[in-house]
Length: 309
Image (spheres, rainbow, N blue to C red):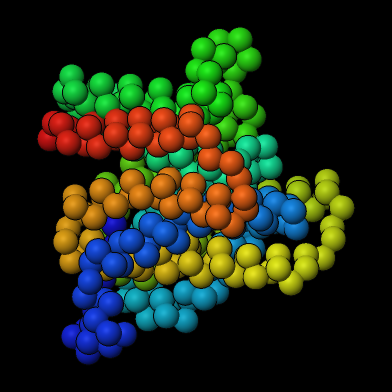
């Protein structure tokens, strides 16, 4: 993740929040858990492509004043590797968000939250097929459990229906989005050494540029209607909390306790997302959702615990 340098004076402010890794990591995953719920609420007022484009435009504008000096300091490297930030990372980030917001028109926020947790499966598979990374038997078992958990969730508890009717349209689109995000995460192994603000800002810019053609298409095919106040408030939440605040909290948590320990907190995202979907939207939490969470999260933890280096 991103390396952040925090001053001692900053850590002593806000009642020591920036020195409490566990509180920061819980806040980060809570914000990410609310992303699917906010996206579900936004589907009534926003066209998905327009929502994605505005999201990354506003994130870029918010970050740019803070990132301007780091970008200037990193300029020599950026001239050589601009394509990495804008295309290799920014493009799959945009496609992930596009997929999620489209998928939420066809499936529940609970399903989306659980299916997002399957992203490490794609990363493990990429490491195996592309990087020829060895896998252990228990790691294979963990990946298998996670896949079954996703199928249980996406077929409403009837995984054998995958052979007759396939996945729900929204669940299939979300899994495609997970593939895009896994591609972004996989590409981080080649991340140039730049300031974290430079990194986030250029990814946001790349995501915005990628989403512009989709937004133009969406506006040309869907009648435009001005979103109301609640729709704009939802957009502001999506911009500030999961896109910026959660990223900062997670980055600081990684700095405090390390990536391996901090990474385990990602497993809270489907749990928080499901709880928020029940509490805020009123979605029904079914037995197959519980089974899906247990199998997906448990499988990922098993795969990571017994991964071969």
